[in-house]
Image (tube, rainbow, N blue to C red; front, side, top):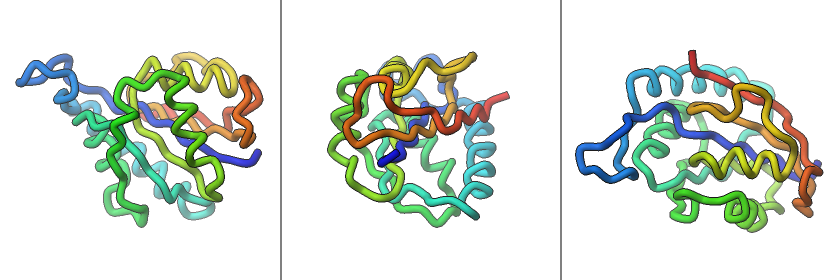
Length: 161
């Protein structure tokens, strides 16, 4: 595989925000605990594996809170907001991955369903049950050509209870 991509669905968020805007929904306490479990996994993983050097997240509050909590106190680059990740479809996610496919280190995208689940199914295969629930991280190995179903799921981390 030429490229490794990490896809993280934001952790559990409140059903509504005080502003009424979907983008302003914050993480629940359960979602925050999921982030702590992901951070522990990541700290262990970082001891012996190549880590992402590029981290993008959707401009939604819940994605920003998720990635900030997951990478807290870890030696990783500062995550960057990317408007194109807001409600991105599988095709839009493939476009984002294509723009970064020649970098040697994993690319990490933090976003939303159904786009994340759809792009995993398109690039690799359907996710095992329970799918891409909030707080799920999927590591994909991909060919730089990004052809349908030619990638492989390297790991699925389900950090929620």
